Length: 97
Length: 155
View 1 (cartoon, rainbow over the protein chains, first blue to last red):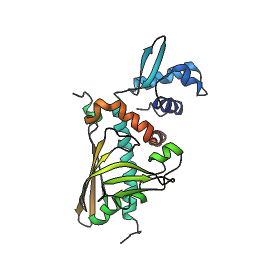
View 2 (view 1 turned 30 degrees about the horizontal axis):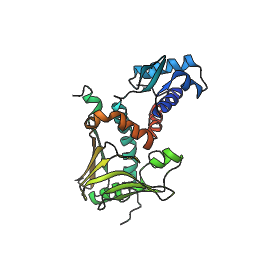
View 3 (view 1 turned 90 degrees about the vertical axis):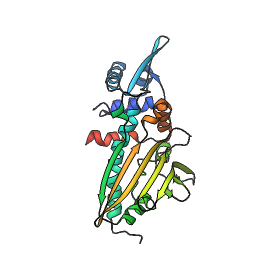
View 4 (view 1 turned 180 degrees about the vertical axis):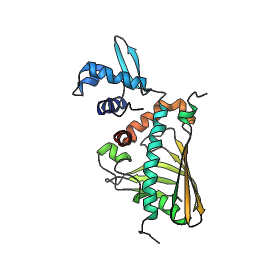
């Protein structure tokens, strides 16, 4: 899955972590056009990271509330990194006795 | 209940370290400040952009927390089992707010002169109904999520 491999999509994802937003609001904070934002949102939706709903005449985008898998994926990556650091520390010569 | 069992199931990681069980355990706990990536994974860095002063493991006191540069103590986890040098269990919720937690169990097993460290991070499905709030708490209290993605993505 490469949905978050793009810096603009990561920026959009970051915005949506702060709450639901419409396309125009998202585009307003980024140096890209609305159509470009829409396209990125489509990729994020297809990856299951973002959902949309109607709010009156607007479409609001938000992080997928079922996206617990994101949290898990995050830790999946995180523990690999953290345990590498732990191993280095455990095997270092700096022993506190 | 969940249709995403594989997506929300427990995470397992093992690492073998070239040291005694005692040393492995104390490195993981008392010396956590020597290896935890505070500059990317802490509450303070998410709020202020810079790492906290340190992270403190207080097993007997039942807490794992970071100490910010302002001297604030922000809790990451409650220590629910502390059995040196073989076992550690944490109720994990690094946030300023109360919320659902996941569980982390770490066991340390001697293998000759080495130690195998097995880490299980579980309970993702148990908080499924509160997924939105949980992620909210991560959003407000545990940024740095994307830094990890970024490293993977650009790797």
